[in-house]
Structures are given as structure tokens and as C-alpha cells.
Image (cartoon, rainbow, N blue to C red; front, top):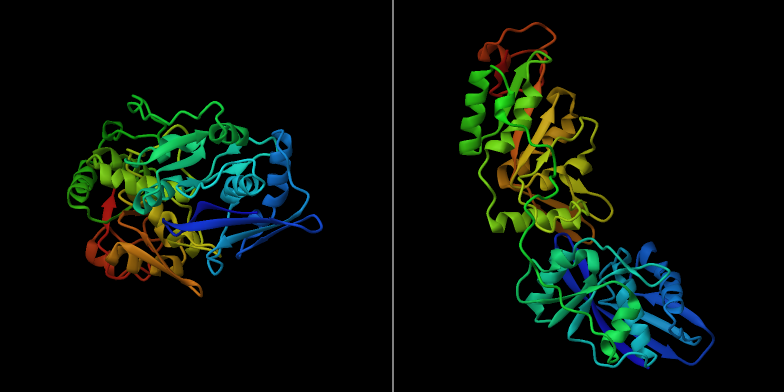
Length: 379
């Protein structure tokens, strides 16, 4: 028997519909998954088998073929465990058909419980765009999916709960979004400008930079407070709008760095990568392209401490994102675009050749490879 279940793939920061087709036919017992799966999906055969058996359900001993369509789209991650298991149970007549009006996403444990999956927010957004009536997501991720209005969200704790839900057993109650908690998990510790003593001219410059969204470089002796003042900058930035908060949350959801118990990020990001970071880590990339530090700093601050220690290639790749506010990552399979509308704040120590704090001297200093930069001395 053949069944079709709808799931979702992540392409950059957007979702793409994936149809999980499961066929059970006569033959020697086998379990094959086709459709350009990665290693995590190929391993889902054992997770699905154990989850079904440990949930007290029947696992067929026939020939099983699972197709992830479209076949030319690469799929990654364990989020297909739940739709594969649902499709297998439906094909084995343990669940009623059709189920094509629902979208299923989740990773299975061996005991049948459903684990957290990254990228739930863009998946729920896709469900609304394509007109699906409901989405079944891990219980932990239900508050994140509920950020998208107009989509009914069912929090799933275990595979057996879905079987009972569709077989006239106890139904899963749709998730009801309540008021936001008074205290949320913070991305970083907030620094107040009142903690900075002195340095009034640098504080004034940071206020101007915050008001106009300008980039800034601070130069001064170690211990003069450059890092402290940079970390205090987000505290004087305006609060994010709902649209900005959703943009930031989408990025952190895909990167799987969303803080626990914080479905919506309200705090402006502050990212301070170490100078040993690679170019791919800074702007994004990898075999499966993921957002880099500049995208994680979207609508926030990117702080580069000890700027001359960063590699020249890493500084050069910042040129296009600073101008266009986006970063494009080209691969043989296509080009992905990530947002990168951030405010760059950099800090550096004085030139080792002993230059003074005169801007004209800084611009022509032979000890620095930063021509045509406006540098604000901190002393």
C-alpha cells in the first residue's frame, strides 16, 4: 500500500515542501530511503524501526521503500523521522488516510518520543503560505511554530500520541499561545553605559553611531574600556519591531542557536567572534550553507576585537555585506542569500611603531594594513 505524508526541507532560511512517499510491497524484508538523503536521514531507518516497535505498534516485515520528493533536492537532518514513521504506519493501515492536509516535522528517539528540530519557524511559515490546516511539531518547538498566525499547531510528545489522535483516541490539544514571560533568556549579559566611568568623548561617539547606524573603530591602550563600551552599545539601540524580531528568530532557529524557552528573540543580537574565525564561519558557508556570524548579528552589532589580528581574507569578505546588507553564498547546486544588516564595531590597540593619536597619522601608519579608515582613539 502507498501513503503520502507532507514534510519540509530547509533551503537557506526558507522552507520547501517535501513529500514523503512510503510504499509497502511483497518481498524480502528491506528498508530503503531514496531522494538524495544525507547520513542522518539514512540512519533514520533504525530510529523509525525502534520507535515503532517500542511504541507497541506493528512494524511490517515486507519490502519498504521511502521516497523523498522532489528527488533532485538534497535533504539533511533528522526532521524526517516523524513523517517517515507516520507514512509507514499509514501504509500499513494503522493510520487513516488521507493526511495530506497536515505537515509533520520531528526527530524520533528510540523509545518513540519526539525530539527538538531546528528551523521550525520557517517551516510553520511555509505551512501557512501553502494552505496546510495544521502542523505537528515536537512539543518543545510548539511555542516557536505558534508565532505564525493562522496555522494550528499540535505539540507532539510521542509517536503513539499521533496514532491515538487519528484513531479516535485521546486527541492532542492544539497549542494555545499565552502571554510572553516577563523574564526571557538573554542572548548575552547586558552592559549598562553607567558602568563606564569617564571616556565621555567615546560615549558620545557611540551615541551618534547608535542613532545613525554608523560603523565605528576604536583605538586605544589595553584596559582603556574599548570592549566594555562596545558591549554597552546594544543597550542604547532602539527596541526591535515585531518584523525585526521575527527575522532574527528565523535566523537563530535555522542555525539551532535559539535560546531555550525563548520562542521570539526581543534582544538585539551582539556577536563577538574570535579573530581565529574562518571566512566561512564569519559570513556563512559550509557543505550545507549555514548563516555565519554576520547573519547572526542581523539587526544588531558585530564586534571585532583586536581588528588587525583578523585575517585579510576575512576582512575582505565583509565588504559586500557591509554595502548590500546581504551575503550571497554560491554553491554548485545554487546560490543562497542570507540577511546581514548589522552594525560593525571594531577595536584595536595602538600601532606598535608608536604612532600618535592624530587621525592623519593613523591613516598613513606603516604598521597598519587599514588604509582610509577613520579611527577614534580611546585614552
